[in-house]
Image (tube, rainbow, N blue to C red):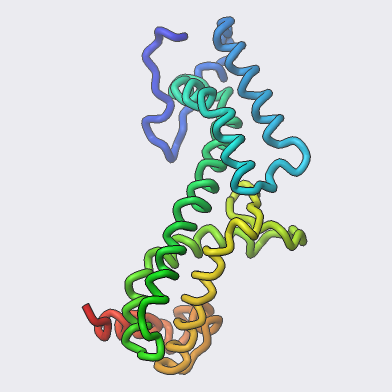
Length: 225
């Protein structure tokens, strides 16, 4: 499509303008055709309540435009006209992988939880320690819903672009996150005498600010390998 040497994506945090942004740019027929397909796909993905997805619906959309994404992603090195479609598709991929992969991880974490006697604190601590990273990854996505003004009780926001997923498809993720939080809150109250909300509300001006990770230290030291 292009013979010029150019890479606007050398620095992913500071994208250079596309060659198609130049005032003297003359689009080729191939460029124009690809741009039209990307814009049509973008409009279709944004039609109506399209940002409210079930897991199955999301997979259908990703499959439908996978080839177009691969084709246009190669041209993003030179052109910026396809960015709108690429950004949305990439966000859809991220949302789907969250539901699919973290959903399975949550399933296995809950299964692991069921195998031990959780009336023993050491087992709880070991479990919290083992799945701390998973809890953080899940919290990162679920946190997008905190500033959402959507009152729909059937969906939950999991993306910076406002992508919502049916809550029933997030069931295992919610179950794991709730269970993890309940145990962590209990230990916060028991060993630091603060609530979950107080823990995250601490600032540098608070006396406990530099001690707020004491519980994590306690968990790591007490965890039974």
